[in-house]
Image (cartoon, rainbow, N blue to C red; front, side, top):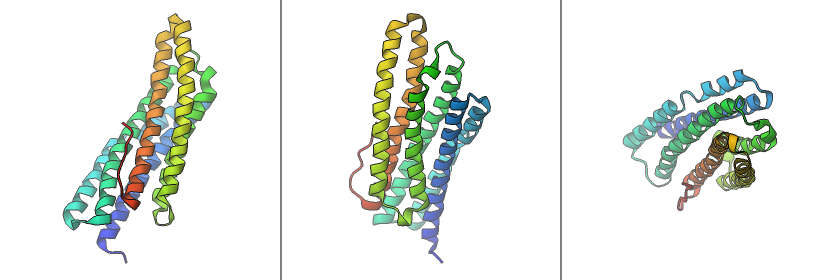
Length: 223
């Protein structure tokens, strides 16, 4: 049987994995809702995101109790610090996903035709979904996974995300200039898709934290 401290670390890791899984389910539901124009799937996504902040706070409490009870040092201390920072990143990912879901549903009933941009929007969202799935797989198989490989994969998806967003942003800015009557709607589309860009940045931060937990070194976060 594992020592109590190792069991506690595994419990926290399992809770983090479940938190990532909830965001993944919401991401998939929102993507399906957009592709199939099914409102019920938007509602399903919102349900998955409803308790993200509460769950993140509960994990924080478990980490803090572990600090207090076991007084970890060296590698164990680094791991708990990474876990504590991860909950903040995941909370922000969940909040961005929630705002994206709500706004995307509203946009689908707006004046501007977002379906014209559907292929690009779908690809943009898939980059965030892929990155989150890599993180989830790592947390589920941490004893046999390589944090360097995780960081590489997540960084590739974030790079795709940046490139796609840059192209979409340019197109939307042109539409804003050309279509004054719908300019406010296109600005809202741009703001909505920026939530996905921010999620991409956060996934790199999470991968960096897991790499830090495994190898140490310095952390360089996206703002």
